[in-house]
Length: 210
Image 1 (tube, rainbow, N blue to C red):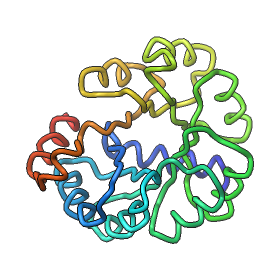
Image 2: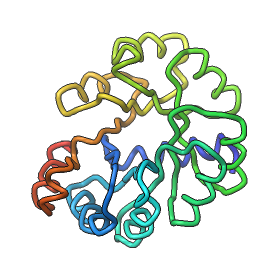
Image 3: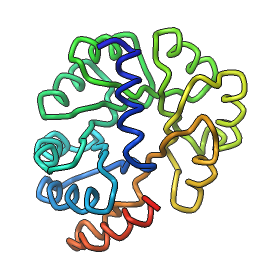
């Protein structure tokens, strides 16, 4: 799967909803009901970050939920890519990008949404063949105004901004022509997961879906 193919797959995933939930899960028991709530709320693409020991088990559980498209976030190494693919991830997301990480995704046929925060990083990824990228960390990198400025000379790249994106500012990003989807964690707050408030999470998903 070439970078061009990966970006095409990422664009398809991004077209399913305007928000990709970014999920940090400590308890694999939360995975299935959380995925069911988010999918029912209209957010089928789910990014499970590989930041906790439970992450791979969560991906396995979520991959069984009908209608869901589960991906792995925080991919840093080729081992992460292989483990995510084996667990059932259908796409990957990384905070940045390296040649070894990109090659691992090519080898594993895993669509990658690589991260870029500057025009130089975006140009380097475009040179590799990517035209769909993650803008991270979005707010710390200048937010929507910075992404608008990057888009002026490089309009062929679409971005998924994450990092500080919320219900309050998502419209600022989505109004930009070079933003097709945003990523955020606010739709699955930890307190609601701990309380098992799946109906509340479904409501947040519907609100984000718009």
